[in-house]
Image (cartoon, rainbow, N blue to C red):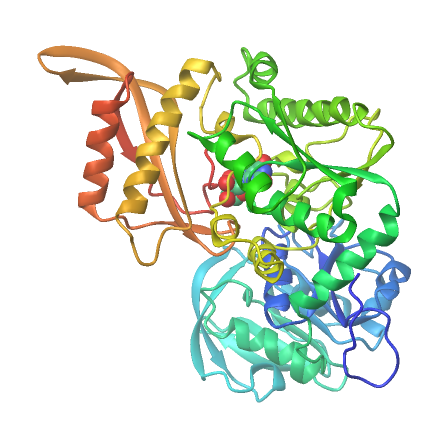
Length: 525
Ligand code: XMP
């Protein structure tokens, strides 16, 4: 999708691309991200993509991801056999390595016990894959089956302390496998292994830059939209701001931004968003007050997936209605990101387990009359921020913490009512104000309040109370895909708790969420 020279002989029409074949691993998107962090463009395709689809991308390397299944199962997921004879360098990770071992004549056994978590890696054979890595290091492993003997012509590069083959490779064919996860931060040599594979083994230069993405995307939007009219869904978040600015840069006043006030926003957010877009970014903004419509959709709804899907549909319905008010609108811009696309697993992959229907891809009604323009569909959050910086957006917008599309509806557990929204909004403002006033360094990545439907007994003054529990969530993360709970100072937690109980009617107890992702998710719904 990006036109850039890769500094190699021959005229490529696209940047050197790494194709990631996805077996449904929760970490597939992290692999794509790590590859891009090495300044190499990457795209994820389903594991069973036919060779013709893969070849269209002129892959400079192929990565096979992990996956939840066993390669020894009778109906185990596989790849087009052309992949392993194409001559394109291949790195198999976890399931990907087992598949290489299975298909090329190695020996595998089904383990009695699964190995999860940290393991010690020991390098036992010299290889360009681990060049520069220490002899012993910590790595993150999660797998059931074990390669006991690599295929003929492969050498064992690393083992774990328990003797498991942890890395193997055939240098001549440039096919490698690692049983550990190089993409997760806990694997000490992970970045080095990925960089070695990309730059040393596959010989891909580190040339993919955000400036080239911006130029190419602006040109593509111009070509696709022509003289057409476009409406843009503004949510207030960095994604829609960057998407709108990119489109505005391409087609200027042909773009009208529609800001739907769902009533599911945080304190003062609606006014601030409209002011920022009109006054700072000088975009055409129409504000639609739709609180009542969203509340009506949510009446009596408790199931989080139903909430998400209804909100997504209502959003699209409103855009459709608004678009009809303008003559000749053909296109709708959305700030959909790569993790939204992958984590929802709606498009092409059969292998993954669906976690949540992320709002932006909540399913378009069949009657949808607008074509979608999703200029950020291949980017991760921090890449979007980088694009925002390249476009010159102010820090208040670029650094804004993520906020889910369905808004406070997924932070009010149980039924969403106007009154319960008020409670979570008031508690959230206290959490936000106090954490920001504490000027923590580093600042948590995301922080908010959740209103639970749980009621508990308390005592205030001399009286008994029976009121709600509010949970405080504060996390550290790089991209929202994995997260840890932020170690907030006790004094700060105390101020937050005291203020919420004293200032927010209907709340008599505050809990602090100390769960990481995985196993929890960031949002409670
Ligand atoms: P989860 O809860 O899936 O959240 O661990 C990961 C990150 O994504 C945000 N989030 C969303 N963002 N639409 C979005 O654009 C959504 O539907 C949505 N749901 C969650 C969440 O706030 C966190 O940063």
